[in-house]
Image (tube, rainbow, N blue to C red; front, side, top):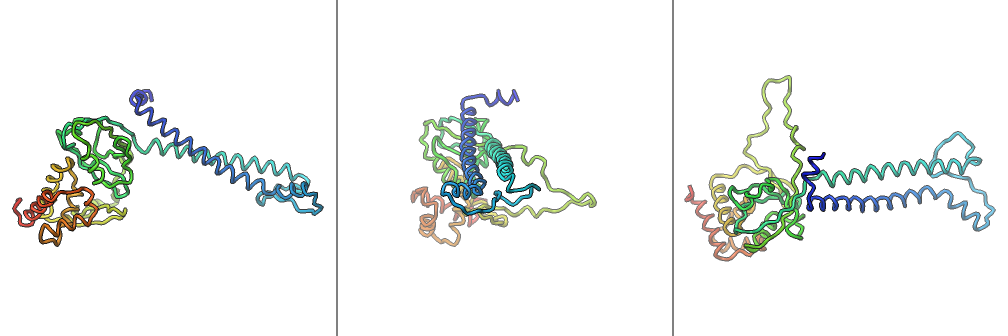
Length: 320
């Protein structure tokens, strides 16, 4: 515990922990008000009618009821208010327990989702050396770090880190190419702050495919030639391994993208290759880009022509 405290006892981590505690406190207050109001309304409902009878001087006799049907094996009319207080105490203890457990669970989720890291960087090169992808649900993360790049020299940045924020701009809910474009738009020589969330590394450490102890042979888990892809709408698709021409084309497009954006992005390169399917010339290819979500990148005509040249070369096998 002392080692962990010394490891995290700096300004940024303390500020992050304070932020998580504040979120937990706000959730606790809101949850307490909601549950408390509902419980008080429910348990005081049985005495509303007797109070109104006293205030309005009504002579109507009504049976006394508890908030819920229960049996104490006592005379309800004689010991009504004593039993009502006992019922209230039971509700209070139950609600307090539920609120305490739920708020502790919420606070635990805040602290166990990952280790936050804030790094101040100086963009000394146009290319940061990152390959970014996302899970299709609005969370972009680092897929690969190019050896010898700007990011590679910062050892606290690791593959798998979720890119949560650039400066004060939240990136939650954005696709990976949007994050790549924002990193590209940062002027060379400027200083920016990158907030990352490092996932728990021991969450799946002991999880693996189980074999049948009664059988000696291993169970097969597929051919290894299929890829699980996450789409923008959150759905998934299993695709066969792409052919050699497509692989060469995607690799060349990715190289061109890295020179243009400063960030390697295999998924974006694959998307560009798929847009070129069925296109016979650069004009149709440019129209396909303009009609897709890649229009926001603002690719120049020269850049589109360069992409088209790489695609036609890959189709003809000139990269082999």
